[in-house]
Structures are given as structure tokens and as C-alpha cells.
Image 1 (cartoon, helix red, strand yellow):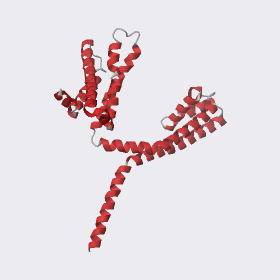
Image 2 (cartoon, helix red, strand yellow):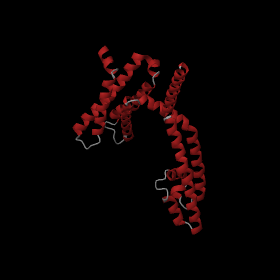
Image 3 (cartoon, helix red, strand yellow):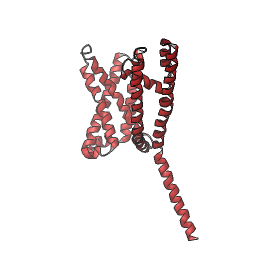
Length: 259
């Protein structure tokens, strides 16, 4: 029992299982014969079961509080629990394919096991900390950006829901259409379609309207969000550099004082 516990607490062993599991799931995407596919799926389920046992062993070894004290453990536990439904779907669909096809979707959740790779990336701790700071710093500007999209979406809905119902028939669809314009890629397709269905004056103002949306939201808006996010991501590196510069200045000052 101690050997099994030590094995399940070994990161190298778990990483090896993750790699093998990735290969197994990748292999299932090809047209395999039924006997071979059955073996591959069974091995996939076995590894998922081992991950569940690993979670149980770690909870017993560290205790619930000790396990949840580490963010990576919370991340691992969540990923493992997301993969568990694939085990149930494997049994529930046996002989009931015509009545329980929706359970097949649960098997897709096993893909989440791949995310366990993340914790083994070099310097991933610093990366995740920087990402957390960037998300916190970007909340206000992203919220403001979404409000701007919402306002433009409602205006566009009332302006163009009759002439272009496939894009602006309701506020939700309008929100999605405006967001597509903000991504810049293919932004001209919607205004060109509206212009083709409208008179010359309406077509002119429509193009001006969407050009304004593109500039304010697609170019300046997204650029602002990106710049704040990136700046927050590298803020830790800047802080460390500034701290080193301050220490260097202090050492120089002490050397000058000793002369």
C-alpha cells in the first residue's frame, strides 16, 4: 500500500500517464477497427480511474485542507472530476445508444485531463501569477468594453433589424454581429450587405457608421484591452527589475559614502 501511495504521489509517474493518455485519445480520432478501438477506450478509462484513485490517495495523504491549500491541487482535482463522467457514459451507453445518445457528450470531458500538462511547464508558477494579475487589472476595462458593445448592439438592432434580420433581428444576435465587426476580420461584409439593400444615402451613412464602430471598438478598444492586459502580465518582471536597480543604487551610494 505504501508503494502504491508513493507511486501515485510521484509527479514523474503521473506525467507519464498523462502523456500515454494523450496518445490514446489522439489515436481514437482515427478509423480504428472495433476490437482495437475497444482496447484503446478501455486503457483510456483505466487511466482515468487511476487519476481518480490518485485524487483519493492525495486527499488521504494531505487531508482535505492540506490538499485544497495548494492551487495546483485544486486545479488537478477539478480536471480529474471533469473527466469522471466519461467513465459513467461508457457504461450508460452500452445497449442504449438510441435512447441515451446525449451521454456520449460526457466522453468529450475526458479531454480536460490534458490540462494537467500545464503544471509541468517551466516557470508556470510565475506565468499563472502574472496571468492572475493581468486578469484582475483588465476587469474594469473589459467590463467597460462590453458595455460599449452592448450599447452599439442595441442601437444597431433598432436601426437594421428590418433590413438585415440575419444579423440584427434581436439584441443578442446584434451583440454577436457587432462583436464580429470588432474583431476586424471580414468587418466590411455586414455593412456592404446592408448598403446593397438600402438607398444611396442610407448606404453612405451605414458605411460611415460601421467605420466609426470599427475604429472606436475594433482598433482603439481592443488595442486598449490588449495593452492593459500585456502591461499587467509583465508588471512582475518590471517590479523585480526596479527592485534590483534600487539595490544597485544603494550599493553605489554606500561605496561613495565610504570614500
